[in-house]
Each structure stands twice: as C-alpha cells, then as structure tokens.
Image 1 (tube, one colour):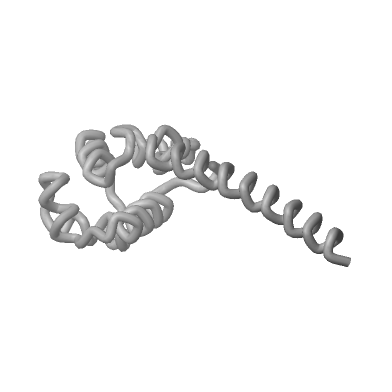
Image 2 (cartoon, rainbow, N blue to C red; image 1 turned 180 degrees about the vertical axis):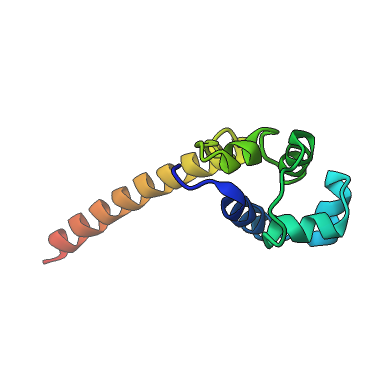
Length: 117
C-alpha cells in the first residue's frame, strides 16, 4: 500500500462504515469519541497528529485490527480485515461446491441432449 496519510484513513473509515451500515453516532459511541472527531477523520477535515489510542479505538470500533488505521496512515499494508472471517471462509466453500454441482449438471444435460439426438 503506497498511499498513506489522512486521506487514506478517511477512505478506510468511510468504506468500512458503509460496509457495516454504521452511522457517525454509532462509530463515535463505539470508539468512545465525539461525533466531531468522527467527522474530522471520516472527511479529513482537520489534519493533525492523532493519538495512537484514538486510531486504535476507531480501528476496533470498525471491527478491524487495532493497528489497522495506524498502518494505513503510515502507508503500510494493513492486510485484509476479513481474511480470517469464518463466515466468509464458509461462503467461499459453498461457492466452490455450487460451481462443482453446476458443472456436473451441465455435463448431464449435454449427455441427455446428445442421447436424444
């Protein structure tokens, strides 16, 4: 991740809030911060040094690793926040199983069509 700084932090916060369908008030409550601080970070209104605890609190409130936003700000790759999500792992397994079933059904349909000719 080459891009860092407060614009990158604002992008991550906005994207994650949308993914979680989270309001600014909910994020403020979960992070133990004011709505003004949420607005400043989400919209990159005031670029100033933030406490590592503040970024950790926002990261955690967004369901991310506590170092996620600090890494984003530093331009480091924070990794995929959903990589270890058991629901997503199971979803991938189900998609794979459905693909296999679909391929088998297609093969059966082709054989039936060939037999009918």
